[in-house]
Length: 164
Image (cartoon, rainbow, N blue to C red):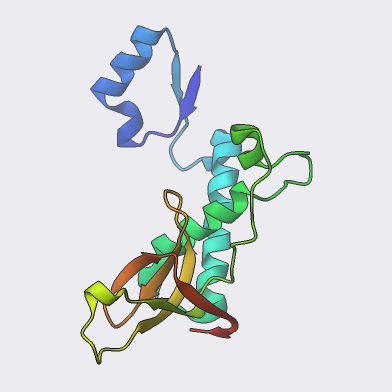
């Protein structure tokens, strides 16, 4: 049994056909009743509220909402719920997460520009805001307003007591 809202991704012909082929019965919730989706809605709410806190604590631009959600998810996966003895990360990977790399969202950060990407007298680092850790690389994510992009770098310096 799969219970979901009536979102297009859940009621598409391809998805409903796949569920039927797998022998999975689908049940959808009534419109405007997130409480019928239980844990999924609670987890979603926790993530969005954490992201909202990240953004408003530093007075960040709302265009960083996706980075805030990404960081909130990263942290929540590595945090114990009051009823659990293992984090979601531990349950999935079978080992404790390394959280030594976590920094405060929105802190001033600088990332190094490699020699190959700059001229002799160019600056060696770009200032930005720390927005989290990369899920796919052993590196941090820094949003630089000067470039309008999020850069992934291993060579960073974060000043946690200085909001961007």
